[in-house]
Length: 581
Image 1 (cartoon, one colour):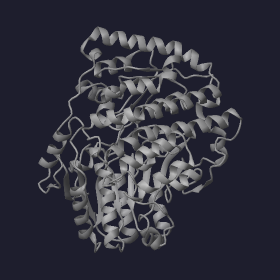
Image 2 (cartoon, rainbow, N blue to C red; image 1 turned 180 degrees about the vertical axis):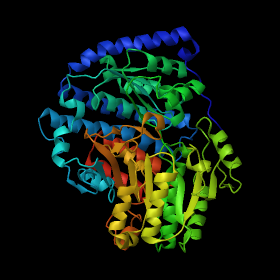
Image 3 (tube, rainbow, N blue to C red; image 1 turned 30 degrees about the horizontal axis):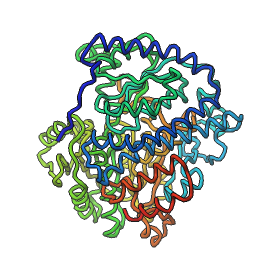
């Protein structure tokens, strides 16, 4: 089933669309003046107000998200909406408010964050765990933000705070073109433009998420009253009018590479010619997060049957979360053809894809994209009873014509490619293939058992450094990096406008760090209690974002309650629900 979405009235009436755009830009012109006069303390209190409003409207938010995605109210899959919706926004707003509080007091924004030298002359900042609550709720998980080469800890501390180091110096009016899949993306991107870039914002949500607009307006009400945020409904015509409006000075978008190029260069043959000539149609700063073909490198090791099953479910989650409609969804699994357990792992992967809870193909165009993928691959396997679940085995990484390496499926299609070798040889070959053969640089995943990791020593560290991706997950899906408020989120830096791949710039980054390059997230190879029995000192059970977690909805609801008002009395209920997952 594909959900049909009603077009907003403004999208059907060109005059009304034009009027809504003019009203929005006019409101922002006044709002920028108001925003420039707000102190850091006032801006921090606005975040506190937003936290209270997200908590108040969280139930409605999740209910609407479930309707958009065709989920039944009692489904454990509703946990995805609690966690990737209100919980993500609450955690980010609270972390951002803490950064503003330090700046307000004249303190170092990075006080309390450990730094260390990272490979290649970089500096790494430990952003997870940050505080006792992280150590309890995400026990065994860690994350570091790595700077670009040559950035020292002293430089990092002296520039932290970005545009909030001089809040009176605003930087114009930005348009945020919201995504239609994960419903925290648009509000998080809006907050980043407000605080990191010091711009007032016209937020234009994707029409797929139009039913959520009343919640967004309620959550941002304190900002809307000031004129610092305007929420504008409509279709492509409204978005195009806002993009081209002279009163909009910058654009941030989340979407596809094709949509980005149509905006920057122009549609069709006109856009192709403009790109060839190097003359963009849009002469404004554009930042973007555009997804791509994300790899999962499965490093050969000696795994138990339980290890094979758990990691197969982990990889299945990376593909099937949100029905596969994620910019960071895994798309190509890279395994060693010389790994004695390769076939056993792939059998478990098929089983995990098949057994995961069924859900509708809710995102527009999913069925068509799946059909195209199947038509182009004779070996395509239909797995499970859910619509569209497809495995593409035996992909050839040396085949320049392989569409699975350059087409983001944005649906439940997962490819498998094999390389020769084991140990360091395989790992470096897989890293080279991920860098050179797969389109996009948003996120890459590595699955490796602790013993193999120790045996590889410096070879593994070199492999992580060599991966040119904006987020790297080691035994943790890169989607976890999206949820860590102090982590950065975006493509690996360096893409030019005419080869944009996964985009330019970062978002999230609640510490407001400058000159950042990537985030590295690490997690436990095994869930508790097996982790402890094998020497991994973590008590984390199966994570609530796993698609087969039976208590994800309950855990997610309780995490939101805790994030809205942290208190020790809520923690036992969270732990009990998580353990039952």
